[in-house]
Amino acid sequence: MPKKKGPWIDLKKLREEKKWIQEEAAEKLGFTRSYLSAIENGRRGISIKVMEKIIKVFDVKYEDFYGD
Image (cartoon, rainbow, N blue to C red; front, side, top):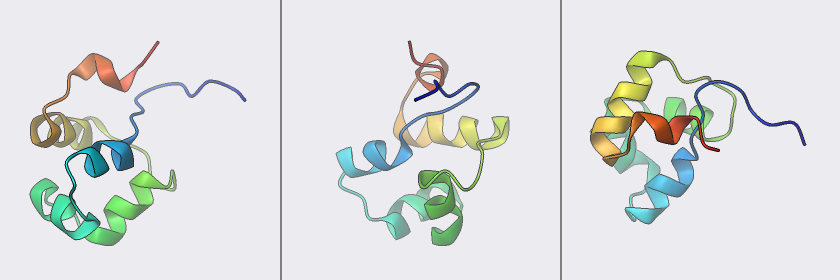
């Protein structure tokens, strides 16, 4: 499988680690549940603005978006 390029993080995994349902995480991020679902399922990309919200809400680092 080709390696994903650009910003990417397993948002669903992060959300589940916090034990948040999609509605709860979406509210904290300022998204709709359907928008969050689209990101989690790879149907939507992650912009810098979205990345900044995820970093703040989930307390992750910028580097986490680029992996190994």
